[in-house]
Amino acid sequence: MNELFLSELKSADKDLLQKLVLIEEHVFADSAQEPVQTEASLDSLELIISQCIAIISEIESPLEKAEALLNELYFQHLFIDRYQTRWPISAYSVAKGLNQRAMSPVVKAALVKEIITACGFETDLVFIPNKIMVRLCCDEQYAIIFDAITGESLDWTELDVRLDELDGDPGEQELKAIDDSVALVEHLSALKNVLIHEQAFDKALTCVDVILSLNPDDPLQRRDRGFLLHQLDCFKVAVDDYRYFVEQCPKDPAAKILKIQLEKIDVGNNVLH
Image (cartoon, rainbow, N blue to C red; front, side):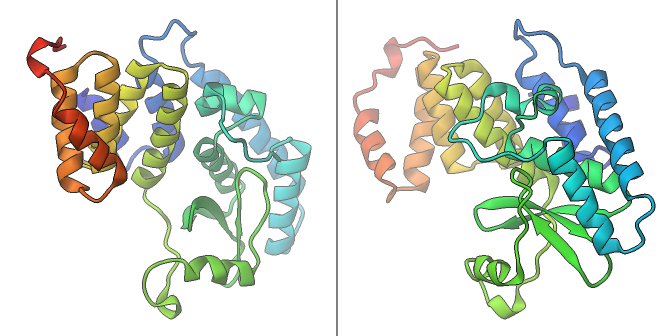
C-alpha cells in the first residue's frame, strides 16, 4: 500500500470530498478509463454553490434560509433521487456522479455537505442506524437531519425511534459527527461490492486493502480479501485470510462452510502471486 496515499487519506488537512477523489484515483489508477476530471468537477461544484448562495442571500431567518437552500439544491439542481438496489460504478466518481446527478450515498453526502458548508451553515455527517445522514445546524437550538439521497428530513419522533436502535441508554444518546474514516469504509465497502458484481476483482481487492489499512484485521474484510485473492489464483494468501476469519468468527455460517473447504485446498499446487 502506498504510504503517501495512506497518509493523505488519514490527514486532518483534507476534507472528505478530497479523500473520496484520492480513493477514486487510487482504485482506478490502472484503468483504461479517462483520468479523473477533478478540476471540471470543482468548476461544476462552484457554480452550484454560487447559485445557492444567491438564492439565500437576502433571507434573514436561519430556518427559512436552510429550507430555501435545500429546496434549491434538491429541486432546482436536481439532487433529488431515490435509492437503487445497485449503484453504477460511475456513481462512485465525484465528477461523473455530480455531472450525471447519480451519486452513491457517501459521495452525495460529501458533496451536499460541501455545498451547504460553503453557504455558511455548520454541517456534518451523522450515523442514524443503517444510514449516514447529513445534519444542517440552523442555529444553536435547531438542526435539520436529512437523507442526502432523497433530501427527506427526519422529524423528532422518527429520530427517537432510530436512536432507540443504538446500543446503550437511549436517554444518554448523543448524536456525534462521524469520523471521515467511517464514511470512507462505508464508501469502499459499497464500491467493493459493485466491483465484485462486475467481476473487477483486482480493483475490488484494492478497495479491501484500503479498508484494512483503516480497520486492520476486520474479520469480514479479511474473508472478502480471501475470496478476491482466491478469484485471482492467489490461493496460499487466500487461505491465510480464510483461516483468520474462521478463527475470529467460528459461529458465522460462512465460517463453518469455509472450515470444510479449507481442508480440501491443496496449497502447494497453486500459484502464489
